Image (cartoon, rainbow, N blue to C red):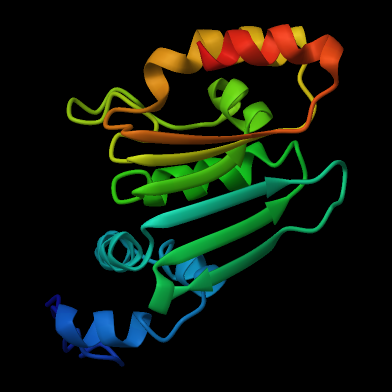
Length: 187
């Protein structure tokens, strides 16, 4: 005779906590810890996404030369995320844009970042999000160095960047010989 042995179902070591409790726990984590937690499962990804949308309405991206260090300062009381990273941090910035583009109302960045948005791995095929920053209303744009490639890239990306832009603050630090390129970007 064959005997069928059934294993007793074991209860999970940690019972499923309600979403409200999970949000409270996640609200105490740093941005880096939230990003790591997001990879655990789909439920955590959804809860972390909700937390970040609530906690981030302003993004500042400073791209500095070839410095290899990424510095992230998440300030939930101000609903702000400050990022300092190398110019070629496209993978990291792809994640930042994916997580916060639905809720960000203010963006501070440089022309180089906007001109190279096509290098980010962000899906624009979602029907309701056809823009990289669909909800950004205020843009603070910094132009320090400008060249024809940046202007061409910005021109190609312009239609896919913003959906509800209502104000632009432009800060330029350029040489007189580049003033025509800056003028073209403003137009």
